[in-house]
Image (cartoon, rainbow, N blue to C red; front, side, top):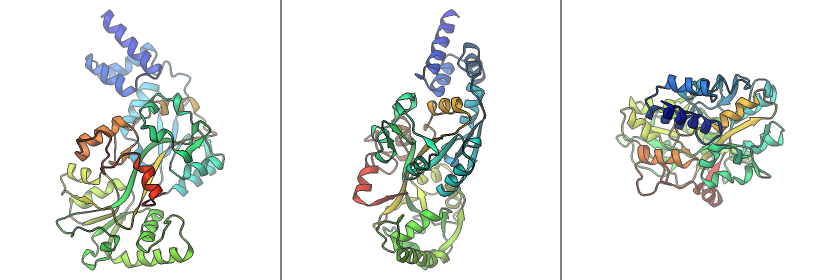
Amino acid sequence: MTDVHAVLQSLVEGVRGGRLTRREFFSACARLGLSFVAASSVLRTLGGGTASAAALQGPLNILVWDDHFDEPELKDFLATTGVKINTSLFDENADAYAKTKLVGGRQIDVVSGDALWGPRYHQSGLVDPLDLSQFASAKELFPVFREISFWKVGNRSIMFPWSWAPIIPYYDPRYVTPFDSYEALFDPKYRRRIVMEKTPVDIMAQMGLVSGAKKPYEMTPAEIKSAKEALIRLKPNILTFVEQSNQFVQYFVNGTAWIIANAHTGLDYRVKQAGGPLVKPVYPKEGYVGFLDGEMLERERDHRGAVERKDNQHDNGKIATGSQVCRPRARHRVRSTRCGVADDPQRTASGRRPEDVHRRLQRGHCALR
């Protein structure tokens, strides 16, 4: 019993010192025959849970996309720290930016954002850059994601990287002829067979690519007019717009959608897991848009201690949407369970390496939002 107690004490000290994540702690306890409840009690009793977290002020309020967390993770955090996490969802970066600017740290401690919104938040004085070297979980990031140039403020980073992916069409080959251009989406035979996520900025950027815009997120008035005309032309083929990308699966499974026009990589895996057909991705020859996102710390946040604890336990291991995450451990899971690319543990669901984030941007083939 003394030996077990010593092991548990060592595990708790590992959590407190940042050498172990909570997931690793609970896994080790399970190997010792302890249930989750018992392991949580150990954390509290030996000083790694609510007892040591007494100084942590909650709740922790995060403004976030629905695929950046899951309910078990929120329960784990409450069990190990005694701090409740409140989540608020948003659709567009502009909405999150406006809300953060309006209510600040009174209602928001952490906010998610896409790549080029990070500098805007910082220039507006809304967020504090992070010293990634102070977070144990940051050590698991691929090196390229620790050195994103447009997030750098001295030796700090505006964002804690979360995921990246192209935004591309997927199609059901039972009904759709293979294609390599956005122009296929306008074929009358796909009338009311296309589903899209309700992301107006990205949809207009895609239509910009259709109509020849060189910088789809910086279109001229004439290019915006052409993109609008392309969207009007596409309208008869659109069945519906969904609020969140995780709703795409049901439309492929029940056969009502033949094409998802603006999905993230990994949709094929999720559809298959849900009992649906083997759908296929398209990387259009006109190019495509994409994202690199992360989390930011609100400068006037009320619950600083809880925020730092949450970021130090940042866990991308669960991938709700199949997007390509920025950490090797989680990427290995993508490789082995989601995309079947067995030849290289650093390849992603689309068969591309994380360094391609920069290379494809430099070539101008992928426009980053």
